[in-house]
Each structure stands twice: as structure tokens, then as C-alpha cells.
Length: 89
Image (tube, rainbow, N blue to C red; front, side, top):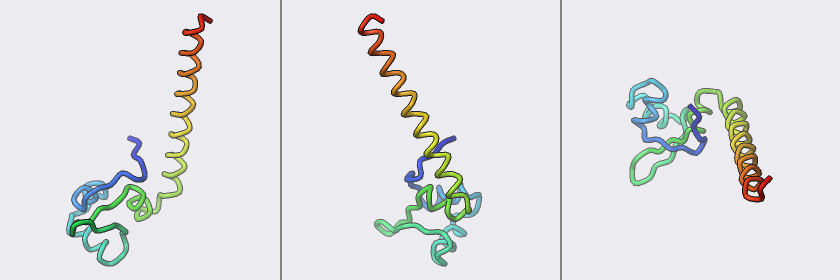
């Protein structure tokens, strides 16, 4: 499954992604091992922050960029095909 680097998770959701307890995520956040931001007293952690914590950020960002390029290419081809159909070619 492709997830965007800016997808945001609660501490509980991040715990599920990391396969650890929510308390462990809070410990990581408090110690600065996992980065996040607090909004209204609750932690929010982005997918990119999880990737950095896991040491896979560069690889995952490269995959994300490739995915975005493939989507753009598919959209361009679809638009060209639509134009061809509309012009009768």
C-alpha cells in the first residue's frame, strides 16, 4: 500500500504502524527518538516521521516520487486519449 509522506497519525495509530504499544510511542516521542507535533495536547506523527524513525525515509521517498510520476504519466496519457476521441482520431 502506498501512503503519502504527509499522512498524519495519532500516537495510537503510529503504534499500530510501528507494531509497538502506544505507551512506547509516547516514550519515543518524549525522548526525541520519534518526531511528532502536539496539537490540542495530542501527538500527531506523519508517515515521513515514521519512515525517518525506521531508517527507510530515503527509500520510501524515492518510491513515493516514482509513484507520483507514474500517476502523472497515466493522467497525461488518459487526457491525450480523451482529446483523440473528441477530435475523431
